Length: 282
Length: 92
Image (cartoon, rainbow over all chains, first blue to last red; front, side):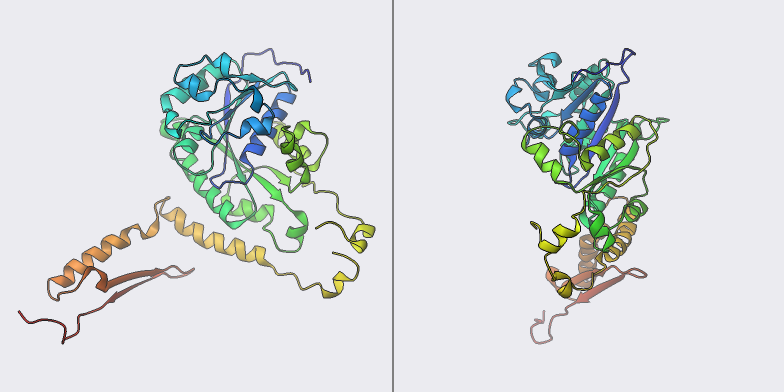
């Protein structure tokens, strides 16, 4: 896909995709958001901060092209240009994979800042895929962020962890520590939302989650089979043909870049009467 | 779901509301302590109580039990002190 690259000086916005809890869709969301940003013509790079448990490369489908990584660049063993992998589908998208063998302590604050500053000079958006948890790796991913996308499932432990992460974003980051700096713009992205279960009172509603977390909503991604299908083949869901999830991510990214998009909760197509009468798988 | 399965369909349980209520209570507590676990002082409290009682009665570290119950409206702190039996306490 050839997109019209932005000619202006790079925006250099750092966005962290975080959650606290694991398995809620951080990497899936990082892949989808960065691909959607790039599709809109923004020069975008997505960085894997999950040192030792590299997975963004598989989700993006570039696992066989990794030569140098983020840690090599931090430690001066490779140039940034050598480690960046250019996406073959969208030419404005790059991936900075992490190390599979090193320790999280290899991420130093100074090293991360140096790499981010170098990226800011070339990219409009720098998307940081945070590891789960609230320890060193997660703190490094969020430290230099301008914006945060807190990925949350409508489920008690995920919401609780998101609340904790929101607390860290407003107290333990560079923007929080810098006198007079605007705080990180944090927004929640609700994923794995199942409208049918919400209708039956089995799942918290979007409003329930927002009332508890008290931050703006970036988008609602429905539970969708398209997600697994896309990750199976190493394609960000927004580049894998039309689906409810892809639509939701596209809408979320439009909001991220400042376009007003009506909040719609698109569900998977509901089974018809025929399917409901004569059964369906699961 | 298949043909006639609606016959044995049970009344839906409204568990989402329970989830929301539990979260609101818990997070109100967690936020008020700004991320520091609320019960962090309990071990220290236990140590101080043991020290205070030991001035008068010989008790062991494990004879004091401190328990906390967090409620919606009110929280309670329960302190159980097991005093040595008269027969087992040695004179002098």
